[in-house]
Length: 178
Image: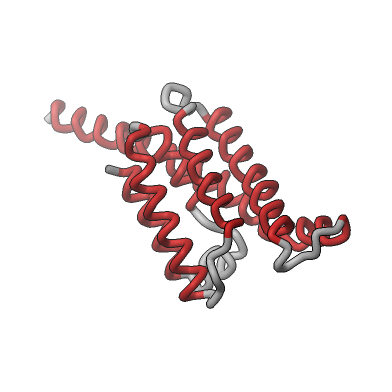
């Protein structure tokens, strides 16, 4: 249940934060929510959430940004699925080092994959070496905030069950003592 709530919260942040991830300069709980979801939910649940994410992207692209949906946005859908699977490797390995490594991997892979798609589409940057480097350089501010948000939100989200267990354990202990 918590995994679904975190994904829905991340989608709400995208929808109601100005211009999606642009309005937050890439500071978003989405990747961390996808990692957490992947670590907690069976793989058969991935497709329903993936469809919701793609629907959100289509809405933001067409209604918020006033642009057409293009083939390169399918790369982002594949990225979402990849983050779910990356999270599934954490199922029995929820330790700070592994969660941090997954968050770092998610941030770096998004930077590499999404910007490559933007450059390859050729609508914003020419398909030249200069266009390639300009695309990645322009994305550096988004990468920095995306990396920080992936690390921070992953730490918070993966800590929630631990805090809940401790809280409910201490509540049960105090009730038993009374």
